[in-house]
Length: 192
Image (cartoon, rainbow, N blue to C red):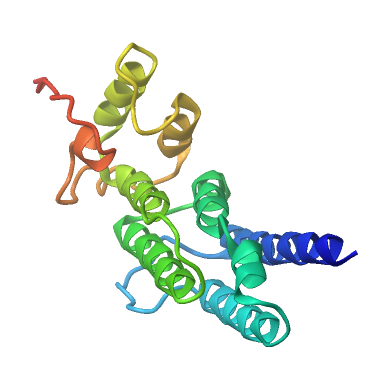
């Protein structure tokens, strides 16, 4: 019975995470200012995770609490990548905001359980792809179906291409080269 309760708690924490991250669909990411704080639902999720960890640590051994929160980094990063399809409109400041959200989750989760930061790094790189030109993204998509795999699946790259970003803002960030943003070392040829 005890193991069943622990598994139920693990599932409950994951449901909480997905619930809060689903609020991305009603959040505006085409914003004029470059706010320093994460979205309200990220702050709420962080508070919820901290409260849950504190309460559980009062009644369960550290090993069980760690089991409950283990692999949340992978769940959160996967949900953030999949949720790009829920963003109706985004601009450069919105990309910065999403990267702040990821950083806030990463910092908070680090206080609860050890994890691999590579999952959150991948999410930041993914959202930074929105700053790439459409041509660079299409080139990266073409490369992803060849023998040289990309850091992202073709479906993930297509979702970035479908995301509404003002054309005037695409490719204006510091990294217009999607191979750099995606973490690959494949050089790109320039086209005129």
